[in-house]
Image (tube, rainbow, N blue to C red; front, side, top):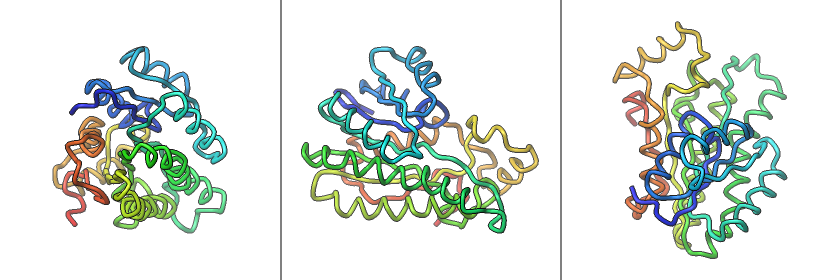
Amino acid sequence: MDFSGKNVIVTGGAGGIGRAVVEGIVAGGGHAIIVDINLDAATKVKNEVSKSSISVYKVNLGNSGEIRKVFKQIAVDFGQVHGLVNNAGIVSTKPFMEVDQEEWDKVIAINLTAVFTAISTIFPYMKEKGYGRIVNVSSVAGKIGGGLLGTSAYAASKAGVIGLTKAIAKEGAKLGISCNAICPALTVTPMTNNLAQEKTQRIINSIPLGRAATPNEVANVILFYMSDLASFVTGEISDVDGGLTMD
């Protein structure tokens, strides 16, 4: 996939699916802009993958003011932002009766409000140029009401991402801005490596393909939507889940 001359922001690009997306953008000749709270990890990716084709910015996605400030700076620094991948997120596995207000607010802030804030900040710049590709990472949990990996707060935040994606796709279509989302199931990342083996196996048993995804397998679908190969696709919600959902 060709990303020559394209500048693409990837939140949570310092590891897992985000890093795989960054590598794909660079491999396609583009410039990846990693936005991550872990500046050291992001810098490590830059040093390992490409010092010239990757830039890094530190952002706390739980702070809307900080997101707006940094994203506006990115737009100024690069002149044009062609793509935005909202990949960063956190998991909440507490049963509904154990989810307190603090847990709810944190999950919604990072998984949903940050996505809104990032898009609403960069959207005017895309509108001005008449071009934009936005891809949001939701989850199968947002379709089926959660599961073993993410429960009520997580499912609600990811369902919100799906609704937001469709709304932005409708309004952005006439402006040259597409917005699509993907819904992964269990993916082998540092975040999921901390799961108990029994829980991991139960999730795998529910996946028809009988295994977890690799970050690259999920990133490939994100990269497709980010590329001009998907020029007639917007408002699409794609399952990347080994057949778990099949809706």
